[in-house]
Length: 566
Image (cartoon, rainbow, N blue to C red; front, side, top):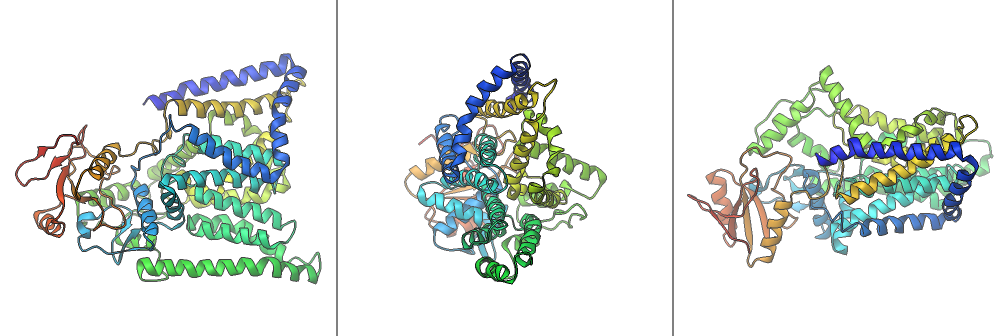
């Protein structure tokens, strides 16, 4: 509540003060203020001249900035089902396999966003899990998140350097860092969109360079970007790649330079790109086969077939309910998901408004309103029309879905901030009574974002939407205590009171049998007895999420006794 109040009153108020101050300076002392501000902006221009250095500095600056904020924004605990699913994938890869064998006691471990037969694995495409695995090998999965958001910012700079002056590309990368790399679930959780955002930037930047000059390196980068998109957000990748794909093939076959130039483009660009994409398709088929036993069935498709009851697109109706192995699964799939969208006008309005509000919170800040009039002129810029079309195609994919998570449009991250910067460029040319009011507002816009991010970080706000940060801190505390205790442990989870299905405790790592701490559902006597016999060498505990505090209890048939702190 405090955070929502902070954003609803204080920050917009500060934005008005900043904008008013800058406009007064521009009106009363136009020459002096312009001279002062241009002197302050000179470092940005100098930093942007050496393009490769600007990309590297952006990457390192994001790492340094977020690490410096660790006293205020600590390494996040997972708390959302999607996070645990990705973390299982990471742990699976670290164990040297693509999927885990189905467990004989899987009914007691059954939970959201995982598949259990024919293998035990995450439902998601593998790119996010792969970067988390890199982090896990380096010491902690969050290191992978940190590297991916830094790469996204750096690649945004690199991508937009191919479409606009380098100083504006650098500004776009800095805006991405200020908005998505401080107080956002993209950096403060394990399920954000940085991997897809970086991949989208690779496609945009490589294509912009190829359209000017054929080269093997950019052909490889273009194909790698498409490959990562296909393995991170495959649905959105289709829409995102349509405008660039059309532009690419038009460039490939154009006759302006003659037959020799066309042959060179096919040899230097098409052959290496096609080779990488064919290898990607083969890899995806192999991955599907290892997880689902069929190269043509993705883990996500198998999960939808097995569990999901919701409508995925706005023209669909939810599926009929079906029985599940626990009350929690029934509440998630037969109730929450089925009632999320039922193809009514009221539901359509609700999910559309939810998309607007969530994306506004994730990508925008109040001062961005200053640039809205200037955005009307962006479509006149022939140079960036392809970027506008690509952004609109990605948004079209998002509009027709019933779910409203902002990272669904992550492939277009560099395009969103590229259009913001393009709007700022137009805004700076606007004058009122010969006073540089547009330039003043453009500076106020950037300063307001800096103030906004600083306020959120200072108050320990991991994400305005509440999707990142502490997660299930009680569960994490119990996990740490049992990890430090002697022996192996089995924690039975029994939900009580008004427990939210979105705070799920039953998640485990890739190697269930050898894990020191296991989390299982407290089911009926038959399933519990079989579970206890299978794990007869473990100390059995009970937790009851749903109360204000969640003590660790000794599991007994007739009574529960609270165990003191270790």
